[in-house]
Amino acid sequence: MLINAIETIKQFAALVTIIDLICLTGIAFLAVWLIRTSFGTKALVDSATRQNNMPPYVPFIPLFFWLGSISLGKTIIKRFVEQVNDWQKELFDNIILCVSAMIAIAVIMILVKSSFARGLKGFGLNPKTIFKDFFSAFVNLLSVWPLVLTAIIITTFAGTLIWGQDFRMQQHEELRLIQSYPQLSLRILIVFMAVIVAPLLEETLFRGLFQTMIRTLLEMRNPKFTISNAAWPAIVISSALFAMVHMDMAHWPALFVLSLSLGYAYEKSGSLFRPIFIHSLFNAATIAAVLYQ
Image (cartoon, rainbow, N blue to C red; front, side, top):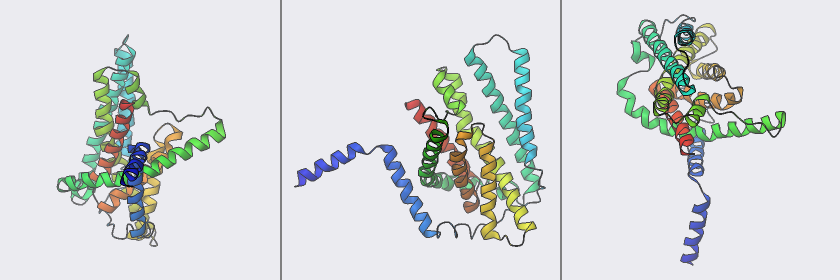
């Protein structure tokens, strides 16, 4: 009897993959969260507003610097750098993306110091919370992972119905480059950009500035919005903006779902490090999966 039970367990273990275990763990975390928060309705009742005197146009300033420096950089490279290999062209393009992102981050830090009460700490960048936020980010990512996969499955199914059996979700450009070019310098730069620079820029911009600005406007201009319910509309609107800045429309549903988790983590914890870590871990896991394949 014991031998049969052991054999059954072995057969079951052979059928279950690591992805299955991750999804099951995430579903369990999500179920607990839904029960504890009455399906999310009580999730942000204790979410404090970030005190700031930020005009509504402020989030667009670093966005202008970001996109403007990309355009300027590509123009300069096109004019002075000629006759290079394809991988070298991609390397230069990613250097431009990295430098422009760092410029935008610097602009954000300057704006935050003059717009938020308590400066960077009031913005959610308190070094004392880094370790707590890093480990909490794993739980948050596990919880949202099944929802992201579900969004991808639904998108693929809908795309197949609309455009036929040949429909495929295209890989993100950076993932395609990692697979296409084996040059170490290009791969290191892409990983650095995807795991460190992009999460830092996108979270400080879309969560830190846009989400805060939208929530502040809702609370100031509509007395019906209170601390307990103004956060969710701000999360939804900023998540839509976050998804739409990515070029591939097929990725929008999954990015929107992921962004909801990022926005929630920011509002719940009050720390911007938490969504930065979630975003970074998500990108790192995606890159690791591509390299493993």
